[in-house]
Length: 366
Image 1: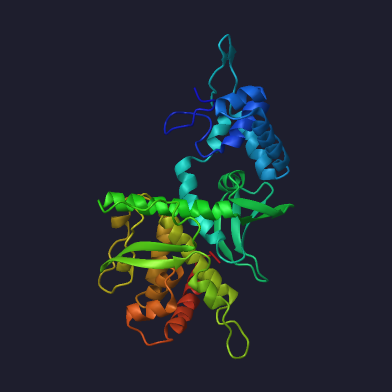
Image 2: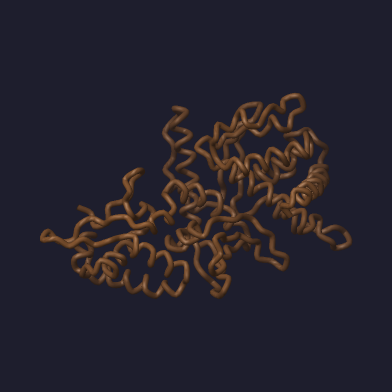
C-alpha cells in the first residue's frame, strides 16, 4: 500500500495529487512520526535521500507560504496506530483550504504564462487572500490575480522561487515552472486532438523547453491557428515603443486596460469547453445573447465583463482589442486578417484602449 494514497475525485482523501512526493515524505516523517527508513522503504529509496528531502523542506519553511501549507498538510492528517502499524489518514477541516488538481492546472495555464512575460513577478502579501502578477518596471502593471492557495501550490511545487522576502514577498517563475506550463498546454492540445479523432498527438514533453505555443481558436470562419510567443504579449511590445517626442506610444493606463481585458478573457476561458466564440460580439447583425453559448462553464463574472467590454467597443475597435490583447495576435497579422491598411492597426488599437479604459473607469474597475 502506498504511504500516501493520492486523493481522487470524491474520495475525501486528505492530500491532493499535486502535492510533491518530497512534501509527502516530509509530513510522513515530521507529522506522523515515521522513521526515515520506513518512509524510504515505501518510496523505494535510501534513508539518506529522505533525510535530504526533509532537511531541504525544513530550510524552505523560511518562506511563509511553504511554512503555512506544510502546517496545514500536517494538520490535515491524523495518524491512527494499531497492531498493524500506521493506517490511512483521515481528513480534517483544513482540507477544504486545499485546491484540487483540476483547479491547479487551470490556474497554472492562466497565471504561469503571464509570469513568462519579460520581467513579470508574483507578489504575495502577509495575510492577503489574493496574490497578484505585476510587470516589474518603474510603473508596474497588473497582469493577473490569483487565490493565495494557488500561489502556495506554485511555491511548493517550485514553479516559482522567492527572490525578495518581506511583508510582500516577490517570486519569479523558474525553469520548472516554464516546463510545467508547456506540459499543461500540450496536454490540453492533446485532449482536443483526441476529442476530434485526429492523428496521435505529440508528447507534452517534446515542447516543454520552447516558448512558442500554437493556439487553435474557433471563429465565425472556422478554426484559426495562431503561434504565440509566451515570453511577451503584443501589447507589451507596443508599450515599449516611443513617439518622436519620447513619450510612450501607450500610456500605463492604456496598457492596464488591455491587460484587464486579457485577464477577464483568460478567466472566462477556464471552463471545460474553452472554444467560446467571441466573434459574434464583434460582427454587426450577429450579436446575439451572450448567455446562450456559455452553458454555465468557466467564470461567469469574467465572461460578463468581456462581453460587456466588447459590446462597448463594437465592431472594429472590439476586433483589434480582442485579437491583440486576448488572442495575442500581432498587430500586422491583425491588419492583414481584417483587411486594414498597413500601420493603421496600432492607431486603431490605441483608440480602442482609450475607450476601454474609459469603460473600466466608469464601471469602477480602474
